[in-house]
Length: 255
Length: 174
Image (cartoon, rainbow over all chains, first blue to last red; front, side, top):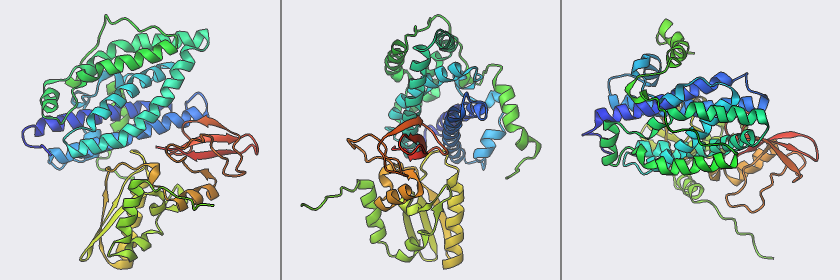
C-alpha cells in the first residue's frame, strides 16, 4: 500500500467518497414510510442502507489514515457543512419519485463505472471496498434503469415529470468528472480513479437509457460546481442539522 | 445412470479446506451455533459469512465478511462470536471484518440452500443457471411472479407464487 507521499491527499480522497455515500444515503432514507407503495418504500430504504454501509467503510478507513483518534462517527457527526466535500448531486432534496429515480440512475451508472475502475486501485482497502460495493451498485442500477424507462415511456404525466427531473439535475453532473489536484496526484500513483476517464462510458450508458425511455438529453449549457471544495447548496445544512442533532446535543451517545 | 457431479465454487471450496485443515476444529464447530439474526436457521458457516478461525495461544482471530455493506446483522453477529468463544473457551477474541474476497451467494453451502428453502425463503439460483424461474419454497411451483427487487432485508427480493398465492422472499444472487 502506498501511504507515504499522499497520506493527506488519500485521507481527503477517502473522506470525500464517504461524504458522497453518507449524504445520499441520508437523503434517500427520507423516503422511508413515504414511498409510493410498500415495496418501493422498502426498496428505497434498502438502497439507503447500502449507502450508509458504504459511508461507514470509507469513514472507518479515513479515520485510520488520519490517525488522530477520530472514528467513523466523529467524521459523520462532528464536521460542519463546509468540511463536507460530497458532490452536490448527492445532497439535493429527493423531490418527487421521478426526481429521485432520475438522480439514482445517473449516480448508479456513475458508481458502476467508478467502482469498476477503483477495484484496480493499488490501495488494498479501496480495492476491497470497491469489490464489495460494485455488486450493490449493479443491483441498484437494474432497478433505477427499469424505473426511468417505465416513467419516461409511461403516461404523459410520468414522462413530463421525469424529463423535468433530468433537466433540473443535469447541470450538477459536470463536476462528477472533474478531478481536483489531490485526486489527480493519487490517480497518477494508481491509487485513485481519475473521474474524467469514465465520462465517455457514463455518457454512452445514460444516452442508451434516455433513448429507451423516449427522453431527451438535457442542455449542457449550465453547470453548478463546488462540492469537492465544500461549497454547497442550501440543502446540505438542514440535512446535517437533523442528522447530527443527537450527537451534538449528547456527544458520545450510544444506543 | 451416472453419478451427479456437483461443482463447488472456488471460494466455497477454499473456505471448506480452511476448516477441514484447521487445528482448532472445535472452535469452528462451536461457531456453528451462531446464526444470522434475520435467518435463524442458517449458521454463519452455512451463510458463508464465517471466513476463517485462527488460534494463536490464548488469542483467536475470527474473520467474517459482510453480505451487504449496510447489513445491521454484522454487529450482532460479532458480539455473539465474542461472547461464545470468550465464555466457553476462555479465549481472547478478536473479530475481524474483511471485505475481500467480497461475499457472494456462491458462498452459501448446499445444506444452507436447503435450510433456506425449508424456512420459506427461495435460495439464490446457481450462477449461470439456465432455468431462470424461481420455484416457490412453499409448494415448489415454478409459476411465480416477481414483485420487487428488495424485500424484508437488503439481501432478498420479493416474489409471489401464482399457484398457491403465497408471497415469498427470494435470496437474491450476487
